Amino acid sequence: DESGCTPLPVLGRDVTVPLVTGGEVTYAALDYAASAPALQRVWDDVAAYAPYYGSVHRGAGYLSQLSTDLFENARRTVEEFLDCRADDQLVFTRSTTDSLNLLAAALPADCQVFVFETEHHASLLPWRDARVTYLNAPRTPGEAVTTLERALADREPSPSSQLRSSRGGPNGPALVCVTGASNVTGELWPVKELAAAAHAHGARIVLDAAQLAPHHPLSVRELDVDWVAFSGHKLYAPFGSGVLAGRADWLQEAEPYLAGGGASKAVARRTDGGVDVEWHTTAARHEAGSPNVIGAYSIASACKALTEAGFDSLVARERQLIDLVRDGFAEVPEVKVLSLFGDDAPRVGVLSFVVEGWNSSHFAAALSAEYGIGVRDGLFCAHPLVRTLLGSDPQEQGECGAPEGAPGEKSLNAIRVSFGAGTPDEHVERFVRAVR
Ligand code: PMP
Image (cartoon, rainbow, N blue to C red):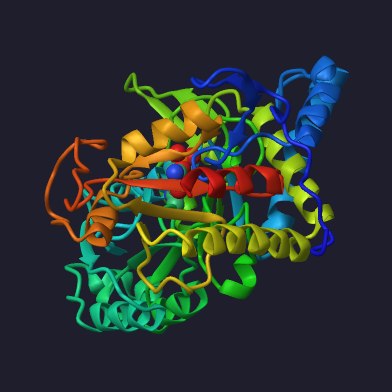
């Protein structure tokens, strides 16, 4: 293979599925953007550890100590993978959605939030109770930066700006939330430039790396983002675990995300009948309850496997697969790829499209039933963005998968194909053949 990287072994690569046309075929999982299949290596690591697991943090036994070490070592492995700063804190969460909701719960008073309307709902919605400014969809990466700069320059002084000036500049605290790679178009966003713009205006920035981290090298230090969030199940680990990593101060000044054991250092009854709590000031502050040790361990295992495979060759291989799709699509004029920044904009292995004269849901169902290919159809939890890309009203409300698609009519939803480190060429070739 020219890229020097063969597909990494993943679970489910030999699963066969029946076809409506008769017979069966190996399943082509082309919905990595929703959940990527776990790496075999991650599964093997978990299986090797499973007989030895014990309670973490509080157990005195040998296996408890082993589990505690594995949990804390997993934290360090993921911090290294993300190239965090020495004083950053990494909180294990359930998912990207959970991570961003945790940060939303930790916003300082009067924090103003800036978010592009193009975001996934997980980065669009957690701030809705704060002072939010929704920014219009930019049509170039440069326009994203100027849009943000203009909005930050225009921002209102916050009511308590005097109190907040040490951390938020004269206008009080502000946070920008941006996605590194779109889950709809796969396009890469100018994160470093957006971070520089945020910081120049005294704002902080959180990166939604749910789609970036599995496909692209990621350095918190180099991008100079304040926080990063991602999910294990998109990074070739199983479901149920995620990460929020970054600046400790907002996290440690906030109330714990969940109240309970593990987050509390000392609890005592007061003479007036209530309870006094001293909360931890480490990541444990937001990890109350028994943590998902296997989830954390499997994310760390995936990080190691990706680092060992090398992002240079993973990116090069993914490029080849994207080119296979593009070349295939070039022969089918009815296919329209959705993009904000132009069809040739750099992207990860995620592409959404519509096929003129086809209902997207029927098209996706046919790919499954006739070819054993699993893609996704709908609005991909980014309703305003997909409506903008389809030329429909971004303010309209409606369910994913509404009926549509008579010849000549505008599509109301789209089809998404996505792939990654475990995808063999044959899956993408079959997809292209099926579309043709
Ligand atoms: N952000 C982006 C860009 C995503 O693609 C997704 C998942 N589709 C999320 C956030 C949410 O991830 P999770 O469902 O794992 O919380």
